[in-house]
Length: 461
Figure (cartoon, one colour):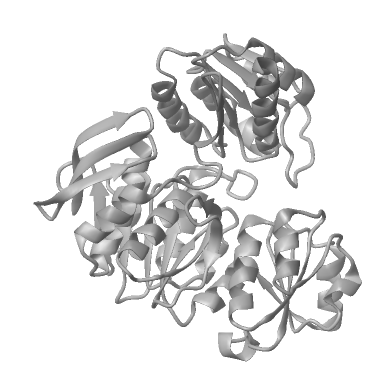
């Protein structure tokens, strides 16, 4: 029997992999509910240290004894079924829940808004949370990235609304049962779990079927997959946004700038003001439109929502400027699908102006590389120089014949360079004022950005 939020107060919940973005947010909210938190991670980190400071008991290795005495164990589907803590929990008969199921419990007493989509869900959920804060709503939120302004990926607010990023990667987002949901787009990804595009579409249909009957779905009218989903949900109120005519919220008078963008917002045929963003890219205007439409449908007023969007300064690893040295700008971004890379590099090209665009890309998972190598090659070809690292395996085993060279073989400007030190040395030595250097991918490529910044400082000191 699944526990309730009230029943967990005063009990001990153990989080396997507590240092991860999703798990750490849940654990932080659990602590705020006077739930005793313990956890484990395979390495020490600033996140782990922060939990220890908050009174949680954290182990920096996975051991069966870590779960002894726990009342509930929470794990992400990235955790192997052979993990000693998971095995021990089952042996002891401890209640075990996925991250998604645990999040649904934490949201259960709130008006929950689940933000889903193949791309843009972290930014959209962050924008929605910040916009609602500007309205005085003080929402709770659990997001897969850190909101730049607050430095946090989770918060227990005093308001009734709970904004949650809904990850589709393993199909577990059907656990949420939200009052309302946002779907930014639907595209084939996570090929290790979804063999075909149709499998992804079915997962989103199953997710949308869990939305409350008196709630609503906000969807992008510019995305064919999202439109098909809305057409399927005939019994549910559906709110559309996009640049085409006929959407409930339409964007026009669009202007894309080097580090920002703006557009007029028209709600049900009436102009309600301008979206003014400090983050670049057409895709971010659409993300902002999703947040704005959702806020309006919830009954909040346009001026406050627009003010919230205007002060939004991004999330960690989403076109995050890590430093500027001697006119050379270094950016880190999480993009790991061809569509995401395409949008990111279009924004980066505007940002670079007359300077060169130098990209260091790390493919994420063998299965994704094998499926999308031609798409990666096309997207990366926008750069003046594209250096491709070896594949970040995540939890996958190597696939015969699948390497990053599959991508660079399809490019005229691609360099297959698996050695991190060789890459950073080359980029630091060759960068010139006006260049934009971007580290790109969902693996550990982000660790290179601060190294490059430090190296440039030493070079020009």
